[in-house]
Amino acid sequence: MNVTRIFGSRLLIAGALLVQLPASVAAGDALPPEAFTSKSTGEIELSLAQNSPIYVEFERSPTLSARLAEALTAKGFVLVPERSTAAATLVIRGEVALLGGPDFAKGVKASMGEVAEKSVQLAKRNDDANRADVVQGTLGVASNAAGFNVAVTPFWRALYLGNMVSVLAESSGIKGAFNRAVTGDPRGICLSRCADWNKVNQTAYVWITLQAGDTKREVRVLTKAFSESIVPEQVVDRALADAIAAIKLADVRADPSK
Image 1 (tube, rainbow, N blue to C red):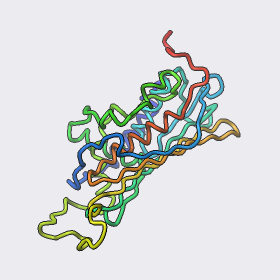
Image 2 (image 1 turned 30 degrees about the vertical axis):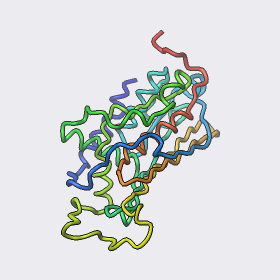
Image 3 (image 1 turned 90 degrees about the vertical axis):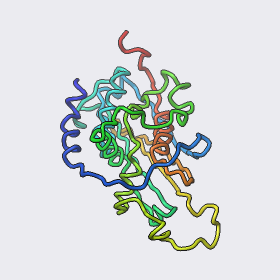
Protein backbone atom coordinates (compact mmCIF):
# COMPACT_ATOMS: atom_id res chain seq x y z
CA MET A 1 0.00 0.00 0.00
CA ASN A 2 1.42 3.37 -1.00
CA VAL A 3 1.15 5.50 2.16
CA THR A 4 2.03 8.67 0.26
CA ARG A 5 -0.85 8.11 -2.16
CA ILE A 6 -3.30 7.44 0.66
CA PHE A 7 -2.64 10.82 2.25
CA GLY A 8 -1.59 12.80 -0.82
CA SER A 9 -5.00 14.31 -1.46
CA ARG A 10 -5.29 15.48 2.14
CA LEU A 11 -1.91 17.22 1.88
CA LEU A 12 -2.98 19.09 -1.24
CA ILE A 13 -6.17 20.27 0.45
CA ALA A 14 -4.27 21.43 3.52
CA GLY A 15 -1.81 23.39 1.41
CA ALA A 16 -4.59 25.05 -0.57
CA LEU A 17 -6.43 26.17 2.55
CA LEU A 18 -3.37 27.60 4.27
CA VAL A 19 -3.33 31.38 4.48
CA GLN A 20 -0.21 33.46 4.86
CA LEU A 21 0.44 34.03 8.54
CA PRO A 22 1.88 37.38 9.59
CA ALA A 23 4.89 37.78 11.83
CA SER A 24 3.85 37.44 15.44
CA VAL A 25 5.02 36.63 18.92
CA ALA A 26 8.48 35.07 18.79
CA ALA A 27 9.25 31.61 20.11
CA GLY A 28 11.30 31.50 23.29
CA ASP A 29 14.51 29.74 24.25
CA ALA A 30 14.34 25.98 24.71
CA LEU A 31 13.42 24.76 28.18
CA PRO A 32 15.18 21.92 30.03
CA PRO A 33 13.28 18.62 30.54
CA GLU A 34 12.64 19.39 34.21
CA ALA A 35 10.57 22.43 33.23
CA PHE A 36 7.74 20.12 32.09
CA THR A 37 5.17 18.13 34.02
CA SER A 38 3.30 15.34 32.29
CA LYS A 39 0.66 12.83 33.30
CA SER A 40 -0.71 9.95 31.27
CA THR A 41 -3.44 7.38 31.78
CA GLY A 42 -3.94 3.95 30.29
CA GLU A 43 -2.00 1.76 27.90
CA ILE A 44 -2.76 0.44 24.42
CA GLU A 45 -1.51 -2.87 23.02
CA LEU A 46 -1.26 -3.20 19.25
CA SER A 47 -1.27 -6.65 17.64
CA LEU A 48 -0.22 -7.36 14.07
CA ALA A 49 -2.39 -10.47 14.07
CA GLN A 50 -5.52 -8.76 15.40
CA ASN A 51 -5.22 -5.09 14.40
CA SER A 52 -3.87 -5.27 10.84
CA PRO A 53 -4.96 -4.01 8.37
CA ILE A 54 -5.30 -0.76 10.29
CA TYR A 55 -6.61 2.73 9.58
CA VAL A 56 -4.66 5.55 11.25
CA GLU A 57 -5.25 9.27 11.51
CA PHE A 58 -3.83 12.28 13.31
CA GLU A 59 -6.87 14.53 13.41
CA ARG A 60 -6.65 17.70 11.31
CA SER A 61 -3.12 17.01 10.05
CA PRO A 62 -2.58 15.10 6.78
CA THR A 63 1.18 15.43 7.24
CA LEU A 64 1.22 13.87 10.71
CA SER A 65 -1.27 11.23 9.55
CA ALA A 66 1.09 10.22 6.75
CA ARG A 67 4.08 10.10 9.09
CA LEU A 68 2.13 8.02 11.62
CA ALA A 69 1.17 5.60 8.83
CA GLU A 70 4.80 5.29 7.75
CA ALA A 71 5.86 4.53 11.33
CA LEU A 72 3.35 1.69 11.62
CA THR A 73 4.16 0.36 8.16
CA ALA A 74 7.78 0.09 9.27
CA LYS A 75 6.61 -2.18 12.10
CA GLY A 76 4.87 -4.53 9.66
CA PHE A 77 1.27 -3.23 9.74
CA VAL A 78 -0.81 -3.03 6.58
CA LEU A 79 -2.41 0.41 6.21
CA VAL A 80 -5.78 0.99 4.57
CA PRO A 81 -7.28 4.34 3.50
CA GLU A 82 -10.83 3.68 4.79
CA ARG A 83 -12.13 2.80 8.24
CA SER A 84 -14.64 0.36 6.74
CA THR A 85 -11.91 -1.99 5.46
CA ALA A 86 -9.78 -1.92 8.63
CA ALA A 87 -9.55 -4.48 11.41
CA ALA A 88 -8.82 -1.58 13.77
CA THR A 89 -8.55 2.21 13.82
CA LEU A 90 -5.91 4.24 15.63
CA VAL A 91 -6.71 7.93 15.97
CA ILE A 92 -4.62 10.62 17.66
CA ARG A 93 -6.07 14.03 18.47
CA GLY A 94 -4.76 16.86 20.57
CA GLU A 95 -5.08 20.45 21.67
CA VAL A 96 -2.56 23.17 22.50
CA ALA A 97 -3.36 26.03 24.87
CA LEU A 98 -1.47 29.15 25.94
CA LEU A 99 -2.61 31.46 28.74
CA GLY A 100 -0.78 34.31 30.44
CA GLY A 101 1.84 36.95 29.86
CA PRO A 102 1.22 40.09 27.84
CA ASP A 103 0.82 38.28 24.51
CA PHE A 104 -1.63 35.56 25.56
CA ALA A 105 -3.44 37.30 28.41
CA LYS A 106 -6.81 36.33 26.92
CA GLY A 107 -5.70 32.78 26.22
CA VAL A 108 -5.83 30.66 23.09
CA LYS A 109 -6.65 26.98 22.48
CA ALA A 110 -6.36 25.24 19.12
CA SER A 111 -6.27 21.80 17.55
CA MET A 112 -2.80 20.28 17.81
CA GLY A 113 -3.12 18.75 14.35
CA GLU A 114 -4.16 22.03 12.75
CA VAL A 115 -1.40 24.02 14.46
CA ALA A 116 1.21 21.44 13.48
CA GLU A 117 -0.04 21.34 9.87
CA LYS A 118 0.11 25.12 9.50
CA SER A 119 3.56 25.21 11.10
CA VAL A 120 4.87 22.63 8.62
CA GLN A 121 3.29 24.30 5.61
CA LEU A 122 4.62 27.70 6.70
CA ALA A 123 8.09 26.19 7.10
CA LYS A 124 7.91 24.88 3.53
CA ARG A 125 7.08 28.34 2.29
CA ASN A 126 10.04 29.74 4.22
CA ASP A 127 12.43 27.01 2.98
CA ASP A 128 13.20 25.71 6.48
CA ALA A 129 11.14 22.50 6.37
CA ASN A 130 14.21 20.30 6.79
CA ARG A 131 15.32 21.84 10.06
CA ALA A 132 14.95 19.92 13.34
CA ASP A 133 11.72 20.84 15.09
CA VAL A 134 12.48 20.46 18.79
CA VAL A 135 15.24 20.00 21.32
CA GLN A 136 15.92 16.27 21.45
CA GLY A 137 16.56 16.35 25.19
CA THR A 138 12.85 16.57 25.94
CA LEU A 139 12.25 13.00 24.79
CA GLY A 140 13.62 11.22 27.85
CA VAL A 141 13.04 7.49 27.79
CA ALA A 142 10.10 7.46 25.43
CA SER A 143 11.88 6.84 22.15
CA ASN A 144 15.12 5.21 23.25
CA ALA A 145 14.88 2.90 26.25
CA ALA A 146 11.63 1.24 25.22
CA GLY A 147 13.21 -0.19 22.05
CA PHE A 148 11.15 -2.54 19.94
CA ASN A 149 8.39 -2.73 22.54
CA VAL A 150 7.18 0.70 21.37
CA ALA A 151 4.70 0.40 18.53
CA VAL A 152 5.09 3.92 17.18
CA THR A 153 8.37 5.75 16.72
CA PRO A 154 8.54 9.58 17.10
CA PHE A 155 6.98 10.18 13.69
CA TRP A 156 6.75 13.97 14.10
CA ARG A 157 10.48 14.49 14.75
CA ALA A 158 11.68 15.17 11.21
CA LEU A 159 9.09 17.94 10.77
CA TYR A 160 9.67 21.59 11.56
CA LEU A 161 7.13 22.69 14.18
CA GLY A 162 8.92 25.85 15.28
CA ASN A 163 6.21 28.09 13.81
CA MET A 164 3.63 27.02 16.39
CA VAL A 165 3.91 30.28 18.34
CA SER A 166 3.12 32.30 15.22
CA VAL A 167 0.19 30.03 14.34
CA LEU A 168 -1.27 30.24 17.86
CA ALA A 169 -0.78 34.00 17.94
CA GLU A 170 -2.73 34.26 14.71
CA SER A 171 -5.48 32.07 16.20
CA SER A 172 -5.72 34.42 19.19
CA GLY A 173 -6.14 37.47 16.95
CA ILE A 174 -2.66 38.91 17.42
CA LYS A 175 -1.72 40.45 14.07
CA GLY A 176 1.83 41.47 14.84
CA ALA A 177 4.36 41.63 17.63
CA PHE A 178 3.37 43.90 20.49
CA ASN A 179 5.32 47.12 20.65
CA ARG A 180 5.00 47.52 24.39
CA ALA A 181 7.34 50.52 24.40
CA VAL A 182 4.51 52.37 22.64
CA THR A 183 1.33 50.61 23.72
CA GLY A 184 2.34 49.40 27.15
CA ASP A 185 1.32 46.07 28.68
CA PRO A 186 -2.35 45.44 27.74
CA ARG A 187 -2.98 44.06 31.24
CA GLY A 188 -1.97 47.25 32.98
CA ILE A 189 0.29 47.27 36.05
CA CYS A 190 1.25 44.20 38.09
CA LEU A 191 -0.06 44.38 41.66
CA SER A 192 0.75 40.89 43.01
CA ARG A 193 2.88 37.82 42.19
CA CYS A 194 4.92 39.97 39.84
CA ALA A 195 7.68 37.35 39.52
CA ASP A 196 5.22 35.33 37.41
CA TRP A 197 3.68 38.33 35.62
CA ASN A 198 5.18 37.49 32.24
CA LYS A 199 5.02 33.69 32.48
CA VAL A 200 2.71 31.71 30.22
CA ASN A 201 0.82 28.53 31.06
CA GLN A 202 1.52 26.21 28.12
CA THR A 203 -0.53 23.03 27.93
CA ALA A 204 -0.83 20.12 25.51
CA TYR A 205 -3.59 17.52 25.60
CA VAL A 206 -3.33 14.25 23.65
CA TRP A 207 -5.89 11.48 23.22
CA ILE A 208 -4.98 8.22 21.46
CA THR A 209 -7.89 5.90 20.70
CA LEU A 210 -7.71 2.33 19.41
CA GLN A 211 -11.01 0.86 18.21
CA ALA A 212 -11.09 -2.83 17.29
CA GLY A 213 -14.62 -4.14 16.80
CA ASP A 214 -16.57 -3.37 19.95
CA THR A 215 -13.42 -2.90 22.01
CA LYS A 216 -12.17 0.64 22.61
CA ARG A 217 -9.03 1.67 24.47
CA GLU A 218 -7.78 5.18 25.07
CA VAL A 219 -4.64 6.88 26.36
CA ARG A 220 -4.84 10.45 27.64
CA VAL A 221 -1.85 12.72 28.24
CA LEU A 222 -1.67 16.16 29.87
CA THR A 223 1.62 18.05 29.63
CA LYS A 224 2.36 21.52 31.04
CA ALA A 225 5.05 24.17 31.27
CA PHE A 226 4.94 27.55 33.02
CA SER A 227 7.57 29.92 31.70
CA GLU A 228 8.31 33.28 30.10
CA SER A 229 9.86 31.31 27.26
CA ILE A 230 7.00 30.38 24.91
CA VAL A 231 7.74 26.92 23.51
CA PRO A 232 4.53 25.12 22.47
CA GLU A 233 6.50 22.86 20.13
CA GLN A 234 8.43 21.48 23.12
CA VAL A 235 5.25 20.93 25.11
CA VAL A 236 3.72 19.10 22.15
CA ASP A 237 6.87 17.01 21.73
CA ARG A 238 6.80 15.87 25.37
CA ALA A 239 3.07 15.10 25.25
CA LEU A 240 3.36 13.03 22.06
CA ALA A 241 6.45 11.22 23.36
CA ASP A 242 4.60 10.21 26.54
CA ALA A 243 1.57 9.20 24.50
CA ILE A 244 3.37 6.88 22.08
CA ALA A 245 5.34 5.36 24.97
CA ALA A 246 2.00 3.94 26.15
CA ILE A 247 1.37 2.13 22.83
CA LYS A 248 2.94 -1.32 23.15
CA LEU A 249 3.59 -4.05 20.61
CA ALA A 250 2.08 -7.46 21.22
CA ASP A 251 3.54 -9.59 18.44
CA VAL A 252 5.31 -7.44 15.85
CA ARG A 253 8.76 -8.67 14.87
CA ALA A 254 11.68 -6.37 15.58
CA ASP A 255 12.67 -5.98 11.93
CA PRO A 256 9.83 -6.46 9.40
CA SER A 257 12.36 -6.60 6.54
CA LYS A 258 13.77 -9.91 7.81
